[in-house]
Amino acid sequence: MNIENMKMHKQSKLIQDYRDRKESIFTHFVYDPFQLKSYQKRLEFISNRHYKREELVSVLLEQNRKWGLHKSVENQINRLKDPTSTVVIGGQQAGLLSGPIYTIHKIISIILQAKEQEEHLQTPVIPVFWIAGEDHDFEEINHVMKYQNLSLKKHKVVDREDSKYPVSDRQLDQKEIATWVDEYFKSLQETAHSKKLYENIMAVAERSETYVDFFAILISDLFEEEGLVLVDSNDETIRQLEIEYFIKMVELQEELASFVVERKNQLVTNDYHIDLDVSKEDAHLFYHYEGERLLLSVTKNGFVSKDEGVSFTKEELIEEIKNHPQRFSNNVVTRPIMQEMVFPVLSFVGGPGEIGYWAALKDAFRCMDLKMPIVTPRLSITLTLPKHQGWMSDLGMRAEDIVSEGTSSQKMSWLRSQSSVPLDEMFQEMKAELTRIHQPLQDVANELSPDMGELSKTNENKIIRELDYLEQRMERHIKLQHKNVIEKFDELNVYYYPDRGLQERTWNLIHFMNQYGTDLPKKLLEIPPRWEQDHLIIHL
Image (cartoon, rainbow, N blue to C red; front, side):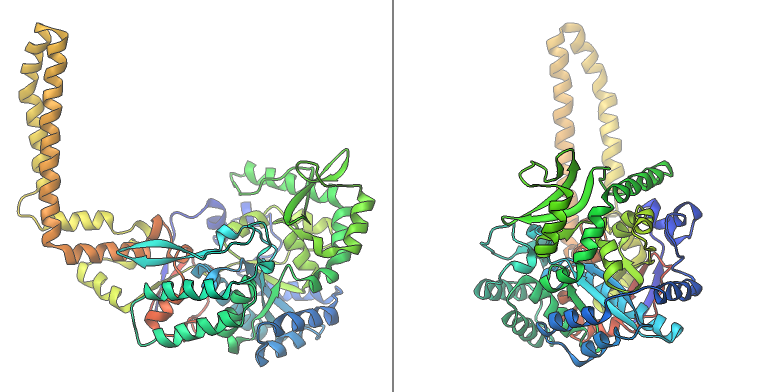
């Protein structure tokens, strides 16, 4: 593998300034993730705090047994009993076939940083990945994109359950998922890796009862040797562990919500715009009621849902948490805080959007008697296939340019170079000349009557449309003459600039494993982490 560093020019101001370590954004965080001394400081802070380590180990062992509990994972979980141990943590939704590749890039980042910091600190650092099992938005995870006819098409799984169910409660229909996997693999090019990959995926599906299981077992198998600890954030066993933390969030709701609003306003003043809609009335907790996930807010009537169909006084809400903790879950504001209470977090690994809303949480952590952990940007990666590397070389293109801008303009330049006559210039000149010649006719027509003037203008437009048509047909003819090369441009665009964005947000890892090999995740773990780099292009 060859690795190329790339500067991104289209990322948000916040993430760019964060990577550039600008004081204007760093003031909203506690630690500099790019300095080794930050990790020593964070370790010292954690060593003075208390965590329910024994209970946490019990919960994690029980959860991971459902997903196979590889020996490496069991060993890592048990290391959490060590009072000097910490975790590098991050999470995502339970995407089908592991979801968009950025999920894999986040996992790789977590594993690499855990190894890196364990070597540096000489204490146990465990990689942990939480799965957002409480999420109800099935539409976000019910599909992958499959490659067909030089384009990406959404391949959705058929699921007849009510869409309001949390993902961790949604049962996997074995017949439907088998059909779905079959259809997906039919869209893949047959390679030496296809049969083994297909059999592995089908075996994972057969072992899965829910969509979270399908995701977790696959991830566990892909990273079997790495000891990656998985946790379903919607699991009832972890809710028992979180009871006192939910109660503290309720008791400190007013301070917590106010601090988040104030910090967000400071960010906006500094021209940092984050995707976080908050008010001082937010409870930042969800209540699960009759299959729905209701966001609570605070009014004169107490803690209420949006339509006030559910209502609690503070005392009633605390009692409900004690009796039914499984009915509660966190939102984007309180999830990081809950994570900090449950785990001894050395570093949180997040994507650009996550780092954006974490920027508003510094004071929220403090009001809960916590300190925001190190916040590390996950590695952002584009994978290029050997075949495509050859095409880029033949066409005189750079991978960096394709990832930034796509191939459209370069394709048109190449097409123009294939014609002995510059068609575009010729037609532009012809239209300009037509307008010049036609103008005296229009002047005479306008003198005759307004109707004749309009008719003469219509006549000019018809002639121009005919010229446009002729130009299009001539361009189409040239494209047909060079069909094979044009398709190369188009395929490169779909692979490396899909939907005018990054590959990692659209493509799925399984497609690349089918091309490159089932050991691709292991190979990606060999890359040296470059935390301050905007983007890495990995030439497989």
